Image (cartoon, rainbow, N blue to C red; front, side, top):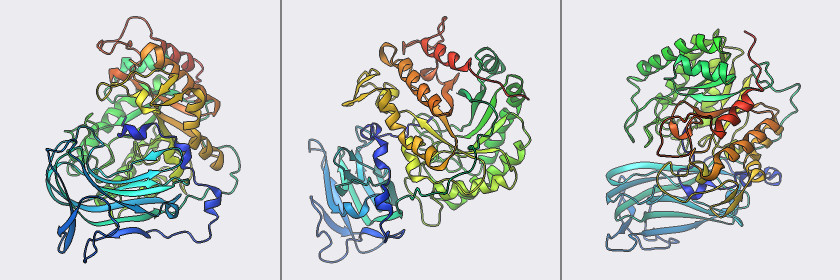
Length: 531
């Protein structure tokens, strides 16, 4: 599990507002990919014309001039930003990609993850603000390319490019700054699909949980036989030091070790009536995060070798498991993040298509499970269109509102109740359904099957809030005929339904918790595979 909204200001945004309007799609002259809304190399005598804020130009990358912003530690707060207004109306509905060359000198550590070196597009609509930005780093470093991607809401009223330093001191240089069209508005005009959607199984519903790859036979027996779950999501997950890129050199050896764990578990899954989702939690080219997980937000979209490795490994997995009865589907990448796509690399839509075709050449029937970028959240389906291969299931992860589900996970903060006011908005069951509206619309438009691969709430949410949140979510999933797996069973104690609500107690409690009883009540409705 990865937090797909690391900036808490973005975590509670209503993703439904990003849906592209039919009126915009009817516009006859769409801007092509690569169209530049803004570009600057800071050359010439009027290099800073149109910019607001204190900045100057000096030697740049590789020659010529660059914009430089400096912030002194004596300032309170130590912030220095420059900005330029962009044509918001022309950007409405488009997937926009920003990029810049950046170098830094003595940039301090920011107080929050969203502070620091800013290469950011501030977007305003009548009812919200967004701050998509590049992950740049701190300290001293030579020129590097950074970028970000965002779908601009169709009702955007203002867009401002912001560069500089926020809440940190030091110096930063910017050059070759670009804001371009990555993709035009998504067309939802499709031919009616004949027959029921492909599910990949004949059961009324799959209900289960995500598990650790180190789960033992007793855990699988408890989940499958005693609790009556009929599904597990099995992580192929790699650990490392935070910020350290994973190596392609030893990736195959790591993967083989993880697949051997799965090999050993499959007979136990069959014995206990558990379908298996093979979840590639750590694609090639990922980097370790603060939680130790390795995600897809480093080189998977900037290094062609990583993309080629990604396709080849799915051929390897498909050949290995094409006749393995308990396997329900292949989850191509956990919470893919394409904040920046390098020239010559595929974006997630194209890369998923390549991998799916490679799998289909080997395994003609197994479900291929596709999550949207970025971070697998419901709003990501706005940017995804169905793959042109057969037997695909579409999956999202549900941790909205993030301030509630992850309270206390990354440090102290407010205690939020559910239902209740969370960061200024009333969250209840109708609001959860509104947050899931992109999923509902995707299912309705394309006639496809939906699988909720992860959802949870931290166990110490106050006054039984976690159970009420989970209860409302599952009711929504069931109403829309979605398969689901809870995050997580016997993985980290913070998500465990076998642990109580006291965050200081890290051992399971003697009596079933209200969250455990909730899951078991739904699992009791399951039918088992007829193997």
